[in-house]
Image (cartoon, rainbow, N blue to C red; front, side, top):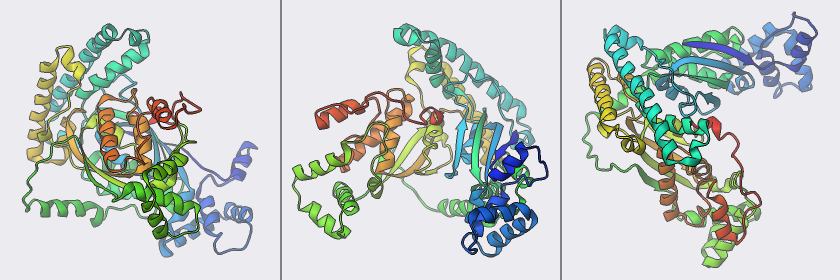
Length: 495
């Protein structure tokens, strides 16, 4: 594992002095945090506060510690921002890292980059003397990956002449399904941008994490950042809340009896009551001087044509790249998914959603991409899954925590996901699109279908961006102004 501090923000005056060749300047973002922290209590201009912080770095650091530690104003740490190169961490550890919402990540994509057989050998498995068995499993998984990749390219070339004309897209389509046999121990790399407050939270949570790889990641992040900004990384130690709470909950849950019945891929657990009416009432509330209660009564008194007219006014000017109006955020939805690790890798990138995953559960089986069946490699695929499961159980007998390293991108888990209607629009634009990976495309389509049953007006234009022009034309009788565009950031969240 390598954690490299790639960059951090600096006061512009410090940058100018460095450009002039003056090296006697404080190279730290702490001066910005200290200056901005003083805004609420000092009448001086902000640029003068920055100047004072630059000239008195020791005092600025002391001020940061006082404001954060004694006064409890942690937000000043958000003005310091770090960039990290993270190299050689497992896909399993990446899931923990990317569970933090207030950071930005761009990760190596297994859909667009051919895997090179690099993987993490977890310390827990090494200390169990299972390293040879683990290496053997990874080699078998990777061997099948390369074999499937080659055959799937030929298969798609034969069955999709248009795809065959583009070698890059052809290869990417083959990788999409071949990667299902790759281990969760497969190495990844990513770039991360994070403010100091969120970084401190990461480091503290990682210090309490049961996986040694994650604890090591936290130590490395802390080591790199504290060299530059020691005064704003203060609460970084492991603590009982992070270390013991879920374990205590699991102990309690183990004494209860559960009757599991649902095996549906997507289940709508909860949605806002009277969702369409509440959506329309929120829109009226935004543009009127009336109370929400009065707006709701007005909507309830409208006929169907009037409600349709109101929602059309809200939607008509939206292009496929536009986020829907923020009033849709007042409608809440909760789903339960059963999805593979490959699907979860994409789901977790939607950080405005609340995502609560269970551990990977081999009893839920594993996903099988249809092309694997079509090329006649199902028996080989299942054999690798059986080998993975065998080692998983051997590791789990000693310790359940590192056992998931033996599993693949195909293995499944249950996930609880809550999001608002506005976020579902963004999700479906990306994930219901024809270019999306097959499994998450199916998940997204089911989500949209379930939501349309409870809020048909609000969800009238939900779906993939490829389908948006047709949906729009059906509703308004003419196409949108822009009918073909790529959503900003689309490629960065497909992993």
